[in-house]
Length: 88
Image (tube, rainbow, N blue to C red; front, side):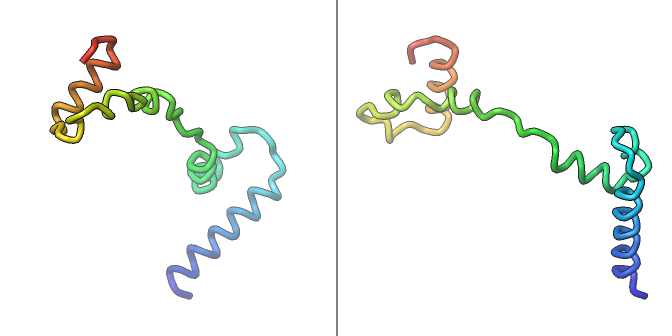
């Protein structure tokens, strides 16, 4: 049996044992570390994108004449100043 086959067999056994366990208690995941890692990886909510969307919602600022000539540093400075309530 190859190492990959052994890993697959162990994973199959862990999954079968986990579902046969029948416990609905959250602490039962402690006995199955691989399943616990997968659980947290797939059930962790992503952070909201609202703050980032708010930061880059300054379209009128970039639609001005000469806006295409902003350097990266200058554009970043104007966005941060605008986000903090200063008219840049």
